[in-house]
Picture (tube, rainbow, N blue to C red):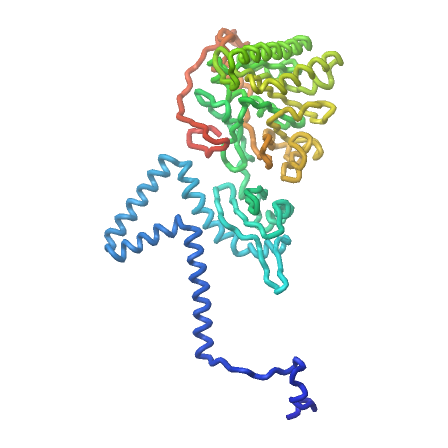
Length: 508
């Protein structure tokens, strides 16, 4: 037989023809095809049931009850199950949200939004791996948790991938899923969390927050986090630096901290010392909250800081003699909070002799004060090293809107800008928004501090004055007004975590 003038025998072995070895009948091929795909489908269902056992287990139990005990028993069990769920959601909303609502919402969001475009998204951002046999692998999503604000996808990295590889593609992933913001956080070796923020709750003004009757000094509610939860500041044994350009909302950060401390100030377990080089334009409306205060004379400001150093040394020697290694605030030994507004004026723009003495006092307080209950809260506009050479001594660093992108790493540490802390891009129309960095944490947290008007500050000073200022009077058009301590409604608030979910009673 000839094919185009060539014998078939001569084409054998050239790759152009092959010898037919066997023929599989159609009645065999179709069942094998169906069985293979049925096995894959069953395996997928088993994996989904194992992954989402919180949903699959109750369904299986109900089906078994229906099959063996009848419909009435199954309906009764379902009713009791729903009733207990409603009681759980009403009585313990935080744990219900974590254990039930977030996983359920996460499954829905994964099926409706992320799953269909996950492989194209990984391929488009270069996060896939192709083997020599042309098999394509993508990072696997092991778990999804979702709130009304943020969707959190837990990823298992491919071999050779690092969290930095995924973080570098965060902007591309944000555009794929039309998210407001996307950030990547290392969860454990070989796994990361990808956070897609569906909306921005920080665009709304945050109202003053009601402080606890007995403030927890390691969990002070001062701001609303981007996740929609309250951000709790740990002040006991910490120092706080607040940096921001003019009009960025440094006053919001300062007064939010003071408001969270106010009941403890009135009770005497916290004492505030205020220094305001701007002549009292920032701190004087709340003057009654400060046990010691200076705002006009540079020598008075220096004397206040040096007196704080002397008091710190006296307490240090006393606690040493008593054999106490852990400081606990009390009315006899309160937490001393030294609040300095516009610190740059004292460290860079004041006369040289004042600058040197202020720098010496501040460095002693920052390096030795934490152990004995002395915390410094300072605000400034210019974070450069020549303005504040000892900024690394601050444990908490808060960066509001900054004038230059280079200032971001100066305040929050190297790499903060690459990890998403774009402080220089915060709109001037949104004061009080910033990023918080805590020593030991890798990712900065985006927050917005509550806004306190002048009337809010005056009302706060009247309600919770310092013990030595119980008879303080404030100027008024109707004459002096006596400051009286008002009762505060007792809310059963606890602060077990640095973040918590807002309840209906919160004013944020």
